[in-house]
Image 1 (cartoon, helix red, strand yellow):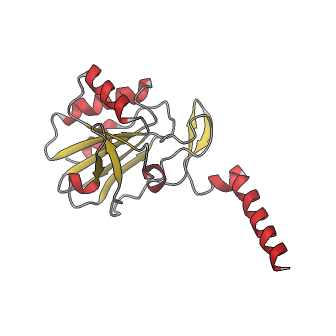
Image 2 (cartoon, helix red, strand yellow; image 1 turned 30 degrees about the vertical axis):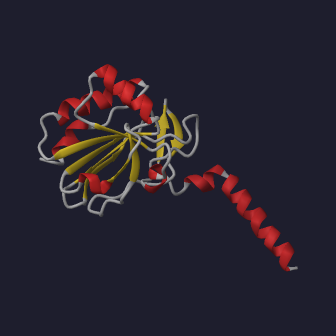
Length: 191
């Protein structure tokens, strides 16, 4: 009897996890070309303490939030630097970062560090820090990993701004993947 009940619970769990509408209830609905997709969770709220993370730099070394302690941190999160809007956001934040005091811009994607480094070299990008989530759980921890659709597993387009005390002062989950983030609002959050 116990064995049968255990199998029934496992079967029910498998059915619930396979049911995409059940899995999507915790995430955020965004669109990709007008079609709805979901993230695995929601962005951390303004006013909350930022979660620590470990990501990989273009030098293949681990980078954590502690590496940027005491500064404003703008997290520019996106699917891939090899797409038009994503690369444009890196260029725009690179341009804006040059004039920001006590601020580091982190450009975060699932791209391999080699691709991030090649992109920055070819584009002359040197005012932002490229970080990869290719071997960590950043996307899940921050609620930005795409849960379904053709870009499942990549990161959604979002911006999080953290103050020097480690509190989130701005967040934006961009509602359409093909849309640029609100650069002006992100920069205004640190001024």
